[in-house]
Amino acid sequence: MSNKLFSSGESLRPEDHATLSNSFSHSEDSSALASQEILDKPRSNCAIVGVYAHPQAAKLVYSSLYALQHRGQESSGIVSSDGQNLHRHVGMGLVTNVFSDAAIFEKLPGMLAIGHNRYSTTGSTVLQNAQPFVVNAKHGLIAVSHNGNFINSRMLRKKLEDEGSIFQTTSDTEVILHLMAKSPAANIVGRIKDAFRQLKGAYSLVMSTRSKLIALRDPRGWRPLNLGRKGDTWLIASETCAFDLLDAQYEREVDPGEIIVIDKNGLRSEFLDEKAERAACIFEFVYFSRPDSKIFNENVDRARRRLGKNLANENPVAADMVISVPDSSNTAALGYARNSGIKFEIGLIRNHYIGRTFIHPDQSGRDLNVRIKFNPVKGVLNGRRIVLVEDSIVRGTTLKHLVRMLRKAGAKEVHVRVSSPPITSPCYYGMDFPTKRELIAANMSVEEIKNFIDADSLEYLSIDGLLKSVPHEKGGYCTACFTGKYPIPPEEVMLKHAHDASK
Ligand code: SF4
Image (cartoon, rainbow, N blue to C red; front, side, top):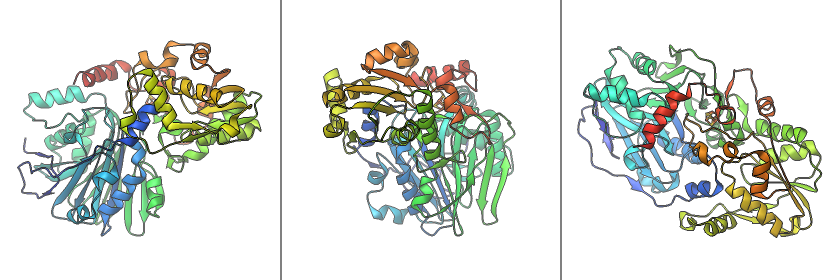
């Protein structure tokens, strides 16, 4: 095959066919990642961004990636196009560490750029897998940033390897590039359609050629992807909080199955051949997305407040105050307080500035980790009956420590209310969940979990309450982690999962 995947940080010209020398940046600062581990939450895997028609496109991509840091903290990268060559800089760590030197942007010239923040679900955590990828295919240079998970990439990778393709990374994204390179189609949209006729799963992508910005979303619309505009500049981003930072306007979401191409002729839209029922990830509203973003054509804040309101309607309790597990449960807690008529207070303070240094493997270490992460406001809690609102429970370990912390701070009663249903099944569509064995609600009843975390009471939002909290005008949702009803049959995804785990 003619295409060559570039794994470097230098300019890539159409005539380049050799792997260039490395100029990656590397950072040991993984504090955001460490904090998620301590929080015992599933992890979102990626943020993707694209900018077209701006003299400082790479800087706009950088700002957008910064706003989307919560969607991936293992690596970050930008590819820019000056119309002739593509220029790439990627590194391990947070956006600010990877792009810590302003001089980096002098090496990312051009009016077009795409970017990526990564947290891996497929492929190992190595610099080699940092995106965007750039390949010099027979049809020209192309860069790709991908968010999601393909369920049949193992089979396709094997088929491609049997036919002579040589893979340089363990990432699913490379499979896309190989499939496109093999397509006989005359133009890039045709090659995309050919590739995605074969690929199945959850994906949102941005791609760049030397002159085109392309955005693509899977036919079920699993992962969010949005179109924005600032004057003549077009923007694509996983969440709209990226547009706010740039003072840009939200135009609309990229529709499920839509391919948007932006070039000197303007914006045009086509659709993939596959048609499917929408299966937007409902967990984006529960936890993954920022409350100041708009996703799936709805403000996350509004949906999250409704989660809290419906939780209060379904599960009232006599108490003196409502507090949240900050920060992700703040909005749902406000909704709960609103509908219960119980006042909202700040009862826990979260420290955002911890690092990996503080992770200890033993149980007392985890207790210490939770204390480093959260501190109770004793004057608020002492002698009070507390409703503690949490957005989701995965293993229950952090919550157990938090309840103990609140009691030690003088809370008379601790009633835990969860603004989503029990998580009983893993996610195979691009979110990093523990196995079923580790999911507490897959192994214990609500009463047993209440006893495990030592709460006075524990109640979850129902599936009905969850679905009532989100808009339905645009179609349905994936609720598989709560219901076990997988939009794509679990046998296929489990096969894929087993393969990834063995890598
Ligand atoms: S299984 Fe859960 S986390 Fe995964 S896509 Fe479906 S709703 Fe989202």
